[in-house]
Length: 210
Ligand code: TYD
Image: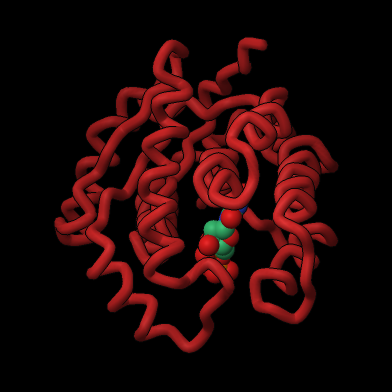
């Protein structure tokens, strides 16, 4: 089935420590400065399913890999469709929605322990963003940043992260024949230069131009 593309929706992806959250925060500031109506959000969410996911990631609860994949899909379903704090609703209000992680994270992380097709099918009905920005940051730089953080979770091992990089490539190849725009960003650049690269691209979007 062809996945619908939402023109006012953009997503940041990358391995843990690649800088997605930093870019979302910088972009948020820039959009506010430029008075462009937007909504910044993230996955896993802090809704009921998202909180359950966080407990599993932190190691307080245990679940089978397929169960975790189903939970990420359930959390995403809530995030896209449920209520006024949802992607669909904010888009209907003509806001530019910027999201830290989306279904590409499920394709990259969950497909290590589950069948890729299983994850693709679970996420096959969700809409796609117009742009996916992939922060291509070397494994070693990401590891150093993660070491400096106080919290860590079950996926934050060198071996797992190395596999995630490979699975991101597989995920992007999966969308090769679609209209999805996948933009790779050089994660070794300074955060301001990365933001400039992002801005050059999204400033062409009708919602930003007007
Ligand atoms: P992260 O953005 O790092 O959250 P926090 O800042 O709270 O640590 O996301 C948590 C982890 O969840 C990260 O390793 C990526 C992973 N993840 C998946 O495995 N599948 C998914 O579908 C999503 C959205 C995230």
